[in-house]
Length: 559
Ligand code: KG4
Ligand code: ZN
Image 1 (cartoon, rainbow, N blue to C red):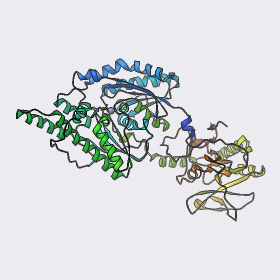
Image 2: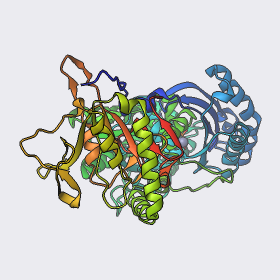
Image 3: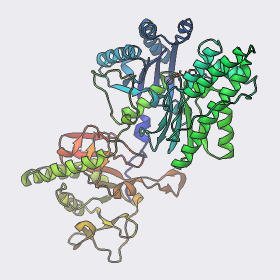
Image 4: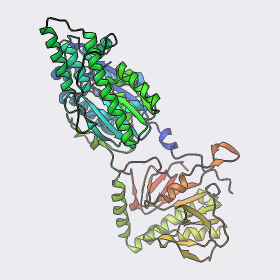
């Protein structure tokens, strides 16, 4: 084995060492908020200017008043956020902003501020769905674990969402009329409580008894909600009691109302976990502050043994930190908005999912474009890249080099194979193992006859030899269909290289450490390299250390 140290950079290494600072803006309702979040989970600052006191006078949010108030404070908050985070605006990586759902006039204030910053600083703009933000408020507390069910209960929303992975949102059900928080606020008004009614009813309910029968709505889709019938039943109860000349015991009515709401939310959330086979429940939105909902879910999570996360109170209600968290995942997946981003009052969440179908389409398109390269051009680029590899420092120092024999229209590396033999290196070629869809790298000597293996690719014979294990290999030249300049690769879909390179191997001499890994170099035609792959990056996608293609100068390790 050579002394060549290829670095202990792991697949995740690059993502976490790269510092992504996102300034996020949230103005969808009556909270103006600006936050700066690092790498999706570290909140450097989260400033919230609430308009509750202003709207209290009207007993609810007045849209025109809300947008005017946002205008008043937004610029100050942005300036203050940078001061508190001790960051210069030129250190920001992107600007994120809620673009829906919400009050259109309020949304537009935040969007205008975000566009201006993005344009002036020359950094990406990321439009974020408000509910995606509420979900990712949990990520500020503890890294999201999938699959999960999210129960969103706020002043404007009551939704159950299933997530298989980051940025994959499946709506299971939602309210058909009032949101849970809205029902709380309306009942608060009936009971003459100050706005917002939610926390007031929560407090009263703790002192009362749930002894008034109130209806639970039955829905066709068991994951849908409806609270308007419950609200009407409360109104009727108050009227009837007053007509009889009796006084309403607010504490008991609050407790009875709260019990129906909380039982409904808990039952449906548990049903969703069961139906989806998920073991993680996260809760978000202002109503997640409710003491009875928290107590009931905590109790169930223990008795039924599932993981429950509820954000701390500051992150339950509207805030920009949660927007900055989800925006990080859009950032690493390069899902950016253009400067014509508009506010959408009733934006749907499922459309915010990053599609995975794209990978198959990308594969087809890129294989087609590679097949169309003219023979002379293919030979020219193959020769150029082979000579660059042979001249590189890492190739010269490597003693064991794994590469491949070109199949179909792949870049041809036979010149590298020859040069390796001439220099006395141990050269390896892959064999697809029939048993567990694995990839093995086998030694091959000059003049040795190859045989057609699975997929018709020429492979070395076994002939009593043994494959090399990953830690014995210095350099692996990896073929692919598309590469990007971050080191991501899209292969043929069989996952052979991903599995081989992603395997975790303990270093026997230092068991706590991962053993030395080969230096991985993606090789291809210049037509196969894009700046960023427009598909969702998945957990098992490996990252290459370098990409070799004409005119591409990409090297993660800086070697
Ligand atoms: O998430 P949020 O700020 O509003 C939207 O984005 O829509 O949540 C505000 C809502 C209000 O309806 C408020 O009454 C309710 O959350 N809320 C509560 C409690 N604290 C706030 N509802 C019930 N119990 C609480 N403790
Ligand atoms: Zn909200």
